[in-house]
Length: 532
Image (cartoon, rainbow, N blue to C red):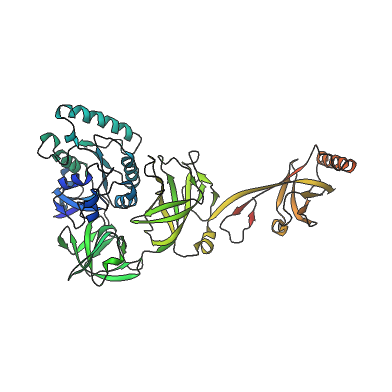
């Protein structure tokens, strides 16, 4: 009978006891776990992702759906909690099936607890809350303190997708105390488990989180399979380095395996590869993962992010374990799809008024990165003061299209019909005939009026005409009408002309305005003006 791997992300505020909890649960440790990093030991906090596991008999409530499995392996992804390590947390959260949100019961919800909750809402559909450190509460007060905190947490979660999640109170360090045993947590985890999506089809995507040499063997890359499968002797590519290598051997928590599929956590041994070249990244089937200069994504603003998301502002974009700075170019539509036959309107910013519209963005990356074309993009403001008690995660989005050409703005984006509405106003200087007027103040002296020839204009009195050409050298234009101007309009213009002749400095009481409305596709290299 085979083993089903289930990835459980352990997230929470710094010092909430995540690593101690993982130690208490785990029976098998990987090479990267329990704060083995020397800096982690020195500083007393988790600085990197840690991985360990424990295995239980396959839950009875899942047997009917997957009778081929005999055991369920929980792979625990221990994420750091410090605010400055949020990029690592987001990367770790994108490889999990369910989240374990750890809360120090003596402190309740803290800033990074809330950020972890946001990350969980973005990256997974199921969560379990652990109230840790109940051993710090006197036994006679413990029950009431737990109930009080459970009510607080339930109120916090009521407007999230996790409103019905289980809340379990434990102590990760007081296993001898019957009131602090973690057996209840293990039972709840087993009962909460589900059959995650697993598919061996498609090209390989393997998220690498650690890389290290083993003398006499080669270089081991540990990570999680996001898509497809991998087998010993397969040829794989490290796209960011443009290198291909052969898989020499593989292990899952110290057990040799010949094959692994989506969702599995394993170490892959490659030969003739320098571990110093890669810390985190992606392995893939050769030739399948583009190095990307830009992205087209949907945009959903995080409700806890209180700033406006402004057009052309810069955000840190996390794509798996990669984070890159990018300029955000916004637009929106009435429909939630991208169709290059449709038009989309330019958007100055996403704020409280339009956050629920169908918003999209082109991301202009500061440097190229390999990108999973079916993945998730998360935009954050990591340069926000970590002590400001504010959510730094601004938006999430599904990747709809990747641009692997450095000049994609000019070579590819012209297909995207994002328009900006424009309006110019001028006034009628005089009437040349009932079918022609001379307009001024519509254009500047240096404007190339040839670009505006034959565009329609509307007078404030209701008539519609077209720009026939320039008049003189000062930006004035001739406007022709197919039908004669209305008698009232002619009367106004004649009256204004008479007043001007009598007293050229007299302010005109009545002016006929000229309105020119058009739109321009912002990615059109020819900058054509379009009118409906």
